Image 1: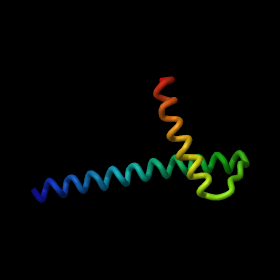
Image 2 (image 1 turned 30 degrees about the vertical axis):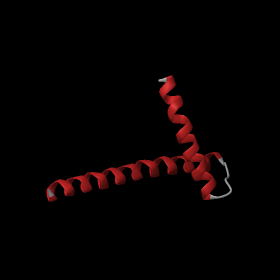
Image 3 (image 1 turned 120 degrees about the vertical axis):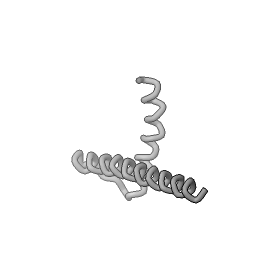
Image 4 (image 1 turned 30 degrees about the horizontal axis):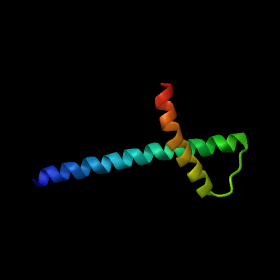
Length: 66
């Protein structure tokens, strides 16, 4: 029983770390593109909200057009 709980905790921790890395790369990629193109944003929160909205709206669009 203890071994099973350790496996579940380990896999969950791995998944959270992996998703954090992917989201971080995505966020920093958007911020980098904005920097290269000279796009300015008012605060880091406005950039975070923009990335979340684009991610949420882009997912269904990708599913429809693929």
